[in-house]
Length: 490
Image (cartoon, rainbow, N blue to C red; front, side):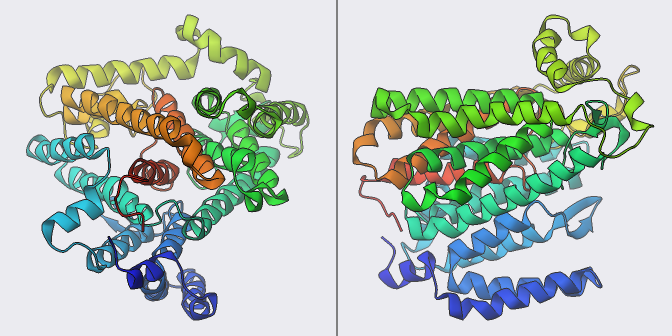
């Protein structure tokens, strides 16, 4: 059990004492436009100050910073400023009071109910170094996975299920998702994007700061369940006008990304959240407070995007001839692409990539080609009909299979089963004893996990910024499982 003094440091700090460190970080952000190195150092100085005062507020800063790839290049890999923030938070967590020794550190960082598949993932990743096609890429990827699945989940776990601790973190997540949604909608409206993303005659698929529409759609699709459940089942502060605005923006961003994976993932998340809510709370849980934000708003968003798609707001004549895909056409192609994939370019390219991933697994079944090595494998073994070497396998299971061997596929399935089993089990067994906030947070975390699992059949969502909602969901479920079990909730 953490000491009371440490709980105060973890759960919050006076806003007046944090004005100066936030001002320092703001100054560093401005300086970064003139000198990235000096600006980054100034931002980190302010961030260290925030970490010492409040870990949840520091995590909120990390959440906002994670989509921005500002940082340093190392062996052709970008080390983002958010990576350094994660290291600082890890050090702070190590020195927080609590159970001392190796066992205490294990409980802080790996006490999650998913620790077995996570440990297997890290062990396989380390072993893959011995056969990696690119040792520097694999090493950086291992450090990323430790940052994501160990450090950030452990830091978020310190908030327990406490509203005061989660408010700044959720506020940061909803603020950055709304900001990115506005950028994405602007891109869609005025064709601000590459020609390859043209859609609906006169528009482009939104990608915001992620550089890829599927990543943008995947991120927003994982945020969507969290805001929907808070709006439907949360306390009064989470059911204000701002929550409706965030919900509408996030839903719209999933749609204007034109990521079919994100569309299907969002629908799956809503459906299974409805099932769990019904089973745990009864039929009355599926009411208009849930149906309107989860179902009606996205439908309105589709209609809006389809109507806007018929209007040329950019007045660009060139881009309009590149693609004649419409919103309705893409919806129907989501189904026809399965029945007749050869007549759909994107699906045909996916099949070529998956075929190459299967070839990598066939030739490297034990340890794979090294974590993050599939891209290098395709470069060394080019496919004539493939437009370009993909950065990943566009499938979590085939990516980890190619990178880590057959056990990588097993690890992916085990990890996801562990998420769903613990999330749904905790919600249904403890539903009647949970507060409105706890139930809403837990159900949203479950929906985020479902969204990730479904989308990752056709994409790979483990990247900076993109994966953040999943990491928060893992921490929430960890706290939910521990609730009432005599374990620390600080």
